[in-house]
Length: 325
Picture 1 (cartoon, rainbow, N blue to C red):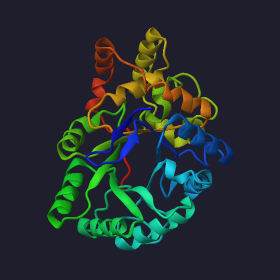
Picture 2: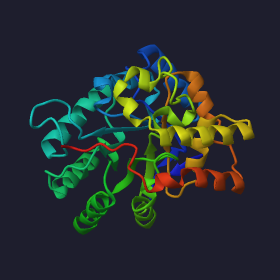
Picture 3: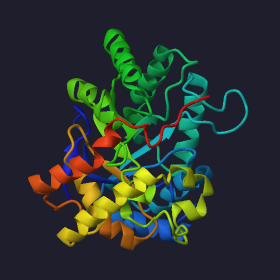
């Protein structure tokens, strides 16, 4: 396994992380814990979850899987801020909401601290200084070690960093954003900002929800058990342009005798400011396949071909973003 610093912090995270959105949803408890332990055995130390994943089941399963002395082996990251219910204070990044959600996450995870606590999306209704002071208090209390953002626009992230610097508060060390060959929009503004400010990028949807694996086509039905099969709303993302991109990546991968998912992940690992890629898995076999991307060396010719195939997606709509309404 390869490890990189998370932004300009002193925290080292595995270049390939484990996303756990599928835990308790597309992967049952037993399978999820098997995936978690296999990831740890492979050297993956960055485990990412959130308070809303699978209706809190993801955090609960991880808590079970990290019992018996395993907690100290991982960098555990969770999030809060997206809606947890319909009540007025069950969303956002107010002091009220974040403090309650952190305590609930700690109970579900069966731990007394999280290594990285992330604001799941920008909250336009709560002053940033309130959010950042709350996070500062969490760090001072020992319940949080580092803080990160997610789904922030570049200007929102820079505003938060400026307030932290002005008030001498904890700084965001990372940001999660949709980033892949099918979504290169972070390269326009977010990536230069992160390089300048020392913020690590943690891509989510690195395989565009599985589209870049080549499993989907315009003619055939979604494969059984796939994201599109389990979540019909995902079909809106299966555009002709994205499937065409996936076909091109698959052709390139076949010429190299490798898997298209491995090729896509390896490309992402070469991008500036990327600290750890959170790739999900619904089986140990899928996890093991993703691990092949770590040692894959891509030639300049392959990088140029992937640049050619994916260039339109640098200027297209983001593949995914999550915002408060």
